[in-house]
Image (cartoon, rainbow, N blue to C red; front, side, top):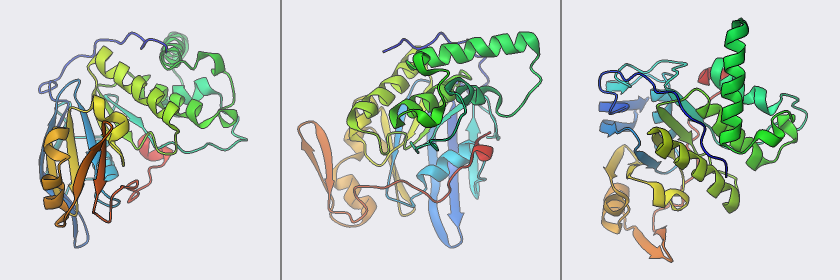
Length: 287
């Protein structure tokens, strides 16, 4: 496994010891409340897993922080400022979706989109700096050997490594991960989680990790935000992932069992969870 590339020390803004802050946050669609009164601080270097059934607002929470979705009430701050589109302090890792086999975009160019999207006119010095940052990002995820390969010909695991590199190339203070392990086998799940964990430890990056299944990341998780039908719980896995806590959230009997070090949730129709697909994000949305 390659080492995480050296990072640039980012200037800290007021409140940046808490890169993400939500106060009284509420979001509704029509008469339906996804969540209301949500208070959440994410500290620098903290790993917070976001769980909940389909439609509970997990992906929508990421959209709020990306500046793509306004709150109906309350406030959200990213590095002490309101969220905005294209913020350089955020890296985004999407769900694993296979790219078209005939896509000829090179791996290094896909990673470079994390720096400048479709913008041109960087100048000679800017282009040299860009090339070095892309090279370092590719090296950090072990993707140097296929840097010039068309991304459509790479495996799903290789493509997801590139998505992680694309998220990290801008030296983000915050990493938003939307089901990045979905459809990956166990070996590639471990690779992706290790890459994210390496970044967190090396650079103190805050991680908000939306997932349908906590077990692949359980050893890394500091706290859990669990969203269900307009209600939520925030706490350590031992505080939230209990029969009592989940039964209260689901308003029905739910059992949480530990089997060989893994958590198994039984009893709620929405468990195991699926991806929250209220809003699919396009490439243009994320830029």
